[in-house]
Amino acid sequence: MIALPFIVVDNCKDEIQFYQRILGGEISILRKQGEDVWNADLHLEGATLKFADTQAAKPTGKGDYVRVFLKLDDEAAFRHVYEQFAAGGMINTEAYEAPFNGLLAIVTDRNGVCWVLSYYR
Image (tube, rainbow, N blue to C red; front, side, top):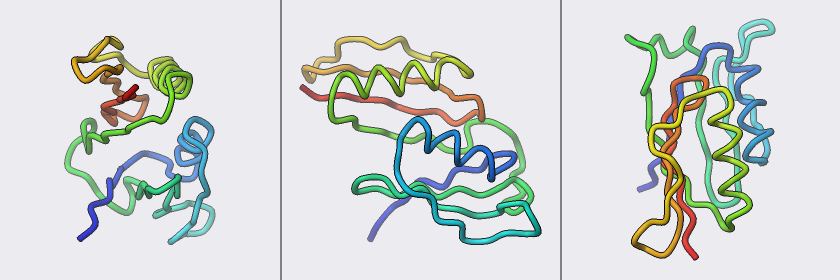
């Protein structure tokens, strides 16, 4: 069994590129309607994030559609992702030294997606 985060956003075409700029990876467009992207995947190292446009997924409410736990490989990457998501979003829990000898933070990005960011030393 594999569990994949499924993230619903307004304007999937632009927003998946937003995530790619921050996290890297390769985009696979799965379904389009004219110029609109309705479903796409962002393939990262060892992980895939699935995206759907609100036109396709038809969510009942905006915000907290999913919470994604993201374990980052080094402190610089942790700080980069944290700062980029916080810039257009909201910091729920400031980055702090966690009891597992690393950093932890919770940030809601500009799309209302809540990210639990972690870096283990």
